[in-house]
Image (cartoon, rainbow, N blue to C red; front, side, top):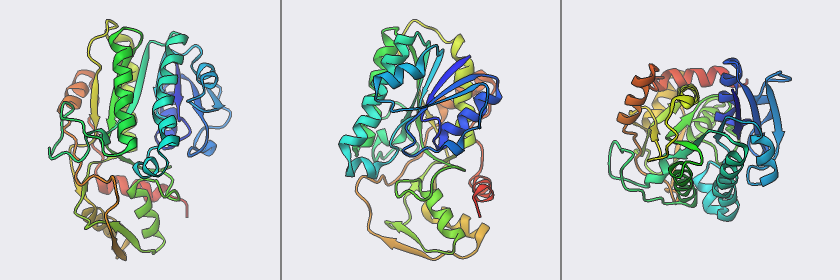
Length: 317
């Protein structure tokens, strides 16, 4: 199968590319390398083609999707804070690019489009856990763009132009997540500081909770969706949407305690809460459990302690 992965040099994308190439697929990566890195990808692999370009550029999108059966759209500025500071730039990267990639995929005759959405679409929901049909109250431009992307994909899916699946990622972590970026995930930033003996800054009281999901568990689900693509009905209908999390919530204080178990005491400092941050986030995985049972694959199951051990072992230095 020929598969296009936008954002394929990034954190999640590069892990997915590794898996797809390993499984014998031909993969085309489209990445502008604004946050992804060539070093994340295999060198000179005969089944891998790397295109440097912007997913919001129709010419680049057309070149990347030419001949593709499946398009996995991961390219995005994955940061609430960045979207608040630079809403126009992130809107182009997060929503305009989604529409351009959809049009390119349809023009190329691709059958399936997998979309990386986000738990941010729920806003600061009081539901714990939160199911896919809960009200959507995005609190940031990033969240609004991700939700709008789902609506666009639902339109293309419903009208039969392409089969779509949307995964609402919760807090993904693991190797290759860039800890040097101020917009990176909290685990990568905390882990890097803790390894160096530097203080960790918590914004708020540390009792805010997240559903942290290890990157290989995310790749399992994406790879399973790709494998199942030919068997899905092509007559439109409701867009399949799945929470992609563990169904277990962890407070930032608990996260720090787990890091201390692995690394020793950590200097923790507290600052004011940040605009757009969500207080609690926990996935209801009931729908994902049915999906996994139907395909004989495991649910996201990597424990936080195991995931952190793997992240620390993979970190340079």
